[in-house]
Length: 258
Image (cartoon, rainbow, N blue to C red):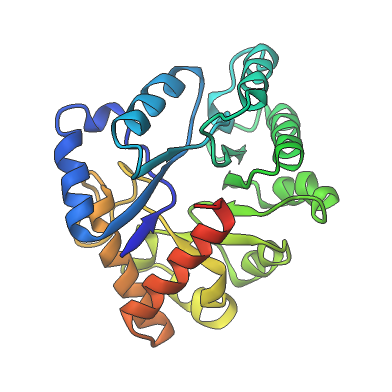
């Protein structure tokens, strides 16, 4: 059994065969599939998928750092109002963060948008699901002052150094999201996990349709591929796959109150 803590199942890449993808996920052992939001246009499709498979799929709400509109404030105001609705379905604030890989021109704005959404995490007591790329220092600058107040979260798609892992693990109640990168032939992630990251501090994810594990690298990813990640993680830690399954599912359930 597994929980995919980060999957864009609503994406257009799945429009032709979404039901089959879900069927394969269930057959492979999926217990939950958690869907991060990206921008204003993905909220509706994401909620539609969660309505179709309400026991399996659960939504998050957030604004991705590379998807900021020219003026992000109206959209952020709208999202905040959605979070204020009693009984809303959102289980986390995400996917949020800082991404300076392609374009650093809106660095300060990305950081301010992350700061506001981190404050939602505290206010609504929802975990924070964080995207970061070429922005480790910026992330720490925004989140460190809030460290003691944040209710926890996931540093999504972790693939950094041992030092970066140590910095992130200093945030209590946060986990590292581990996906297909751990299976890549030249990945340094297995060594970082083995030396620096306790199994008790990771969760599993696909980031589907992206970052498919070996031997599907370069092809569309999907939740049914999580067992490949799970078995690689078991190999790294020298434990049975069942132990990885139990611990990572337990981590996700406790964090996200599943």
